Length: 77
Image (cartoon, rainbow, N blue to C red; front, side):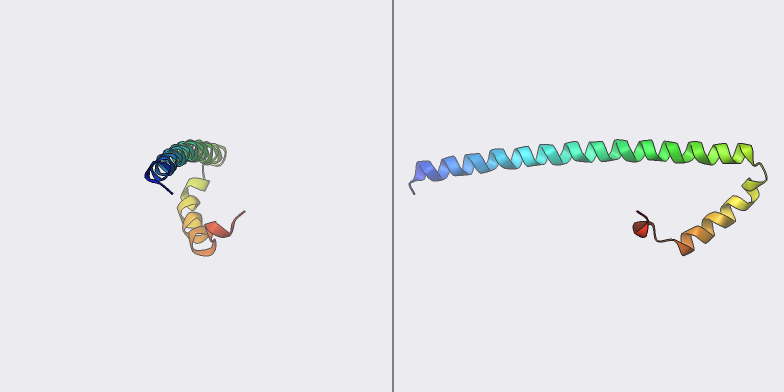
């Protein structure tokens, strides 16, 4: 290969890397937005339960600690 062909291949690789980086950033933004939406939904559910069952507030922290000890979040599908 001559120098011009090598430079062209390098230029194409650089463009490809830029595109991959842009795609990765877009996915990162999308995941953050989805995580934020999930957090909001969980908080709505938590507050709804607290309103519907005011006595649950006293038991919530104990139950939360128990679940954290027993459940592997990566195993939940």
